[in-house]
Length: 621
Image (cartoon, rainbow, N blue to C red):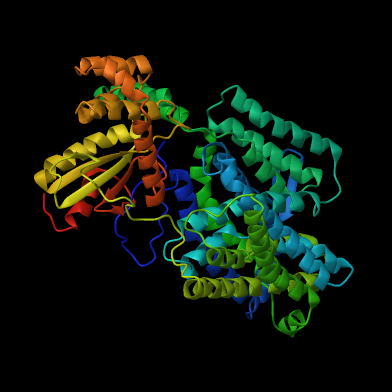
């Protein structure tokens, strides 16, 4: 599985090393962080319009009624509700899709890694709610406890990019995992606590729609259109049942399955595209296009289409519609004197960090889990402070929690001020961590931990060559097999100026025969035929059973009896463990991972890109 690409020297002052993540998660993080600017601009525009001489037009715009009519059936809402109940359902749908993908094939598949951030996420919701309830007065004001439970992922990641460490990939993963429970619980609170009285008939239709989604996956429906139809029915039934539409979006996304592309499906699609290239006929083109669509799960195809729209249009539009509080005529002064405002501020900027930090400290001590490599308590403190940026979910719940417009305005002021204060507190925490705990980058190591040793390492090329390219590979990894052509081309380009080093990083969870294949290569090395076996193994990745390996040894003219004995030697197994430990200490988490002259390379690993990095060392091919 391709989890990691490598890193060389950073190209900008705020480079974020996200390439060790799966491609969909990298895209998700990039889109979320990039949309934070649009979200901020939209919120400021809404606030400015609401406080301008033309503020009446702002209120009139969102009070305008729009309706959809089919026959005698009519669905009518004002524009404000179309944004909050309609478009925001799409936003939560995309979140549900992403959470399901990460749980199925992404960063959350290793449940041991997610326990601590999930506990922290839960505590980061309970403690702020308690703080709010302690500060706010009795009566309707108590309904606002849900305002302080959520975190705006886009705003948080955008703020982290501005005030956080230069390299913060590991912290970003931790915070994103933390917001999974945050998002799910917040939506359940919205859907259950802040919904109207229920209508049984529509509720039954919503439940039937939810049941239809996994059924579509079971019958292997690969087109997106049936899922879209069911989601629309689910949304309509949820709204008509009296539940908030966000619960339809989240649950709908969670129930659309995600899976990794199957190798045979990928190869089948490649064959059809080759056939189309040779004979560009309409039927062959349609067949090739459909086979490619079948390779990618409906979950990921929907995400790739919808995520940019939700991040760059829907969420900013929501901020524009909900951040416009008229602060004139004493509204701001009243808000600053209101316990509701201070309940929101203290819940988000004090309760959130206390809940997250307290649970991380206790969870680490009690063995619930441990912080990711490269992430310290100072980093977590800064990230916990940034989690107090509630914004999107907080504004949505504000509109649902209060009927009194004064309370609604006071809570909105609290949400806006909390975003500013949380960002400032996060910056202060990161600076303090740097000064007093020497916590700089919140990322995996970026330098090769064990220097290349010609007496131990497998080296192709001159052992004292000025340039070194180290690869951590897995003999069953298809991306590593493709990389063999890349390294061959680089050796041809640079000649004696380059030495290529291969180290073992088998991934037994996804490649069952990888470790056995690595032992076979080392057994061949005892007969001075490592590179011959290396090439044979990558050429026969689908045939790495024991009998296959013995057959390759015979074809290479090895002493087969000695080869079989050496396969189980403790020294060979220890050598693989040593390479894996070196990979761990060097920040390698997947294959292939490349190091250019001792520094991890992040980005594409094609020949041109790696050659460019090697040229930067002053040697021309």
